[in-house]
Image 1 (cartoon, helix red, strand yellow):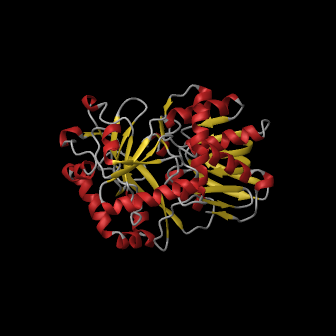
Image 2 (cartoon, rainbow, N blue to C red; image 1 turned 90 degrees about the vertical axis):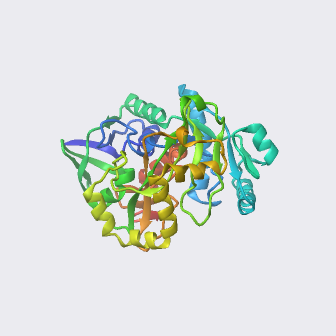
Image 3 (tube, rainbow, N blue to C red; image 1 turned 135 degrees about the vertical axis):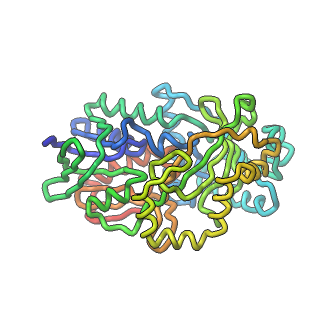
Length: 406
């Protein structure tokens, strides 16, 4: 049986960053990364809008605020060092009514606390900056950027292998047993032992925690982020990211326009309950996933507390006209013909049994394991500092028995 110093389960950007930082800290350590998919960055890392976030939305002092702010800088530095294309296109958060203007002022205060550069923009300047966008007022965040996170993840995998580590795709984990002498990890093709295990499994993180005997009240509920994209004739429709002002009563940011690093413009996402954790086509259904959700009381409590929002998102999912109305609040010249199909993403939303949506990172530790049970957006932006933080936890000096973060 192969023996390793460290095993990381999950070849998304957070897991790869963790393995990379473990090897940076201990160059002589043996490190292996396992993933059930056939390539790295297949799930959440490869199905997002590619935004390098500033961290303006997040509660000051939270891990999300701290790590996204650091991640914005580190992601750009990493891309510069390794020749990965990115662009500081900037972002406009657009208020379309007086209530949103008030909320925008709160965001500006939060930005000041979090150390994020932004400035208010009036109606005339909105039109000057983005002729196809309208609003009463906006915040301009010049440092927000775009990148292809799949390329970042692939570079991390290359660095891991160049440093002597292994990245094994097509290795779905079927068993985890922690003992006094190490952790045994079983896959369909065999077993291995490691001194320390890190699990960064995203959409499957709760299942692997249970498989390892970790007790937690957190379960992953998948939400489909359904996107459209604009036709090539609309390639210059906007030059910056265009976001609505988030409603603090709602769990997600809302539909936005996002230029991508490869020259497209995406519209979305919506947020509807997913019926398959890893099923991206529109009518994907996994009976195991549905049965697990149906038996989880936290989901029903979330549903009862968000009936109106849930119905609204379902309507947007079923009706392109309804979806279009969301976009035309700030981009009134868009038409139904502009909304072309694009593959959905699936967000791993952690929910507690009492129905609380978990918005910050959740990390559970045992003597020899670290389980990342929630790494929400902006996890891709913050992946480099998150990976360093997790690596420090799993190293012997960073461990504390049966501790919890988040």
